[in-house]
Image 1 (tube, helix red, strand yellow):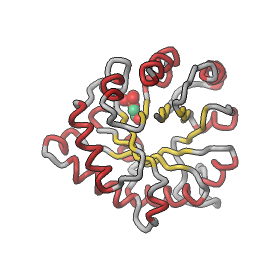
Image 2 (image 1 turned 135 degrees about the horizontal axis):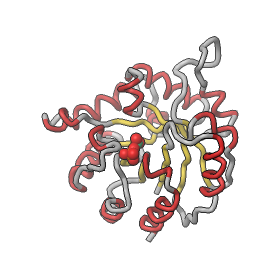
Image 3 (image 1 turned 60 degrees about the horizontal axis):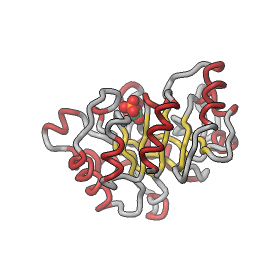
Length: 234
Ligand code: PGA
């Protein structure tokens, strides 16, 4: 099981120092933990048991791109994973599938695992478009990649209407959508993200639906993350 903790735009320098010493005390019995902090904290984190991820990467390679961070720079700070196409970036920063495709290519070139986020809006769900939306987002994100390259990507299914809302799809719905992704991409790991919490994680895990979770809000509460890991590893 993979658990990816997306801290989003939270934690000051002092708060992160405390957070990083606490996260190293988590007890893990086989769970792969990936910490995805704000970019400012990447250089100060190192751990032999927790992997490091980035929340974003430039669609450009190194060069005159003020404010950007390239895949090569991330690699030099031992970043092994990177979120791509998170809905907050698609929505608030107008990230397109074309840009996402360029980011994935840059990451794969540097041997960083892209965690490609996909998901449908509430309206798309109500119009029974989820399957089409998910497969289109993946197809455009992996354009011009070889089969071997595509298989390196971790796909994170995050229904947009579920992120940060406390509402999640039923286990059957999640299974149906993940099955439809796995039908086309059988060798890719698929995570679920969107309001994962202590009340729903057991059900999702027992049903053996997913390869792991992408966790936002709860990632800031390490006591709860320990309980969540314990439930998953039970
Ligand atoms: P959430 O966020 O766990 O707070 O719903 C998930 C995400 O944004 O990846």
